[in-house]
Amino acid sequence: MELSTKYHGIVEYDESDVITFEKGIPGFERLKKFIIFPAEENEVFNILHSIEDETIGLVVVSPFLYIKDYEFNLDDEKLKELQIEKEEDLLILNTVTVSTNVSDITVNLKAPIVINIKKKTGEQIILDNPNYATKHLLFQK
Image 1: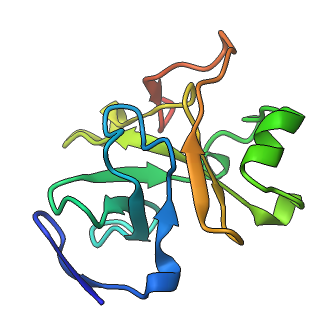
Image 2: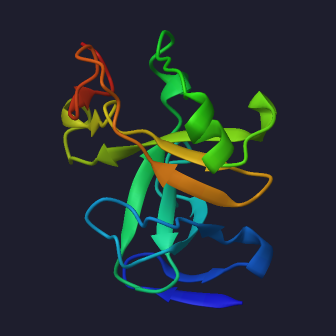
């Protein structure tokens, strides 16, 4: 299948690549189906892109590449809701605010995107942790 995106050109994907967000993503609640593909400009970043709206794509990154002590617990209810049986089924991503100045790039640690890669379902959750900010500098000085 092909997705003609506004900013990333045409992206090829299979139906098996589609991740369903039953609740949508905050700010984009009407959009339920997304794919992930590498950002052309930088292989560290990925794009979480709606297949329902060619203009909506979020830059995301694995927080564990940069924030070694980033951790949080998912309660049993959330694990059940996302049908997560094993830790290996989890993919954690965080949204990135890009800047032309690398030292100004931030990552939202307060609201990770939790994806069950086995079931192809996901949800962005809001953490109740004062140590995590919505605009954490990705590259610490």
